[in-house]
Image 1 (cartoon, rainbow, N blue to C red):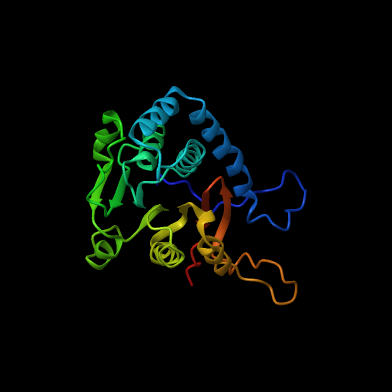
Image 2 (image 1 turned 135 degrees about the vertical axis):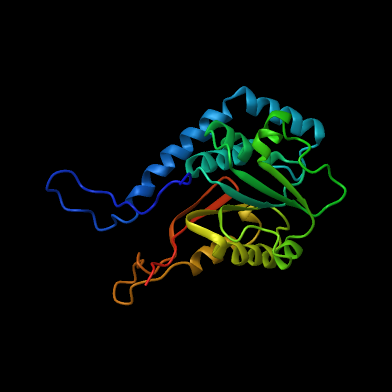
Length: 243
């Protein structure tokens, strides 16, 4: 399995007791890993070239350097095989997902990039060497709703990126549509989470609380971890245990 495994529990050394929040402990290290990957790409010549390309095209509506670095870091950390993104536009976000594929040597990974506008050059910013890498970039022109109705998207995915219409209703709708398709440990990622309350409201609904203590119930909560970095929000799905 290429996507990182999430079911192993952290063990305390020697005879030390396990911490109460041990189920979440394996994800503490992810922050360091994502930060390291993000810092690496942020300082690279590749980032400088992509910012130059973006500015030459026009930066309005295109992901900035910090968010691109965060997206790259999350993708490298997860090592997904199947990714779907909405609002691929001219390919800035697509580029950094594909770059993470390449740097992690994920030769069979696929990015299904959806863009409804006929007026943009879909994926135009993607460097040729990444666009042709094992056919990993799969552009899809049309509306997310139509692709879902037509059953044209993978039923199971490792990662979903929302970057299409940032209305409250549409963001919440996309989160609800793609969350069930995510595998255990899969990533729901959203750009521009500051635009409205959709992302924090969605994450809040994934919590379950112990009635006596009021604390998070890790067995019934349906995420392992979540966070926000810049304008990128993410949640790591915890699937229901098989009965």
